Image (cartoon, rainbow, N blue to C red; front, side):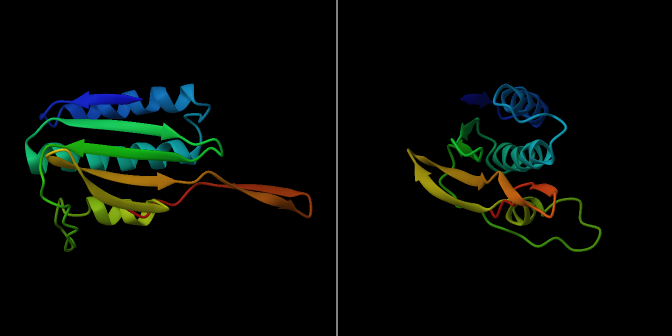
Length: 142
C-alpha cells in the first residue's frame, strides 16, 4: 500500500488519515497503542520528507504475517537523514529521535535518485502469566 504525498506540510494530515484507515483495514484498531505509535512515526517521517527536501514523497506501509508493520517514506533527495538533538524549548529537531525511541528497527537506503527511510514496529504479545494477559505495543528504533 502506498500514498503519494505532495511537497506541502498540509499533506502530513492527509498521510495520517490514510495510515489510520489502512491500519483499521489490516485489523489494527484505532484504540490500540500500536496504531497511535505508527501514526506518530508516519507523521514524523512524512514531515521530515516534506519539510527538509521540499520534494514529493511516497509513503508505504507493509503488513507482516505476525502483525508487525514496516513503514517507508521515499523522497527524491539523496541527502541522508541527519538526526539532531533539540534543546529545551526548540520546536523542531526531535523527529528521528522520536522515531528511534518508538521503532524496533530503522534505517535508510538509496532508492533511485533519492532515498527511502524505513522503520519496523513489531506487534508483540506476551504469554499470559498467572491468569493475566498483557499485550505490549511495538517499539520503533529509527
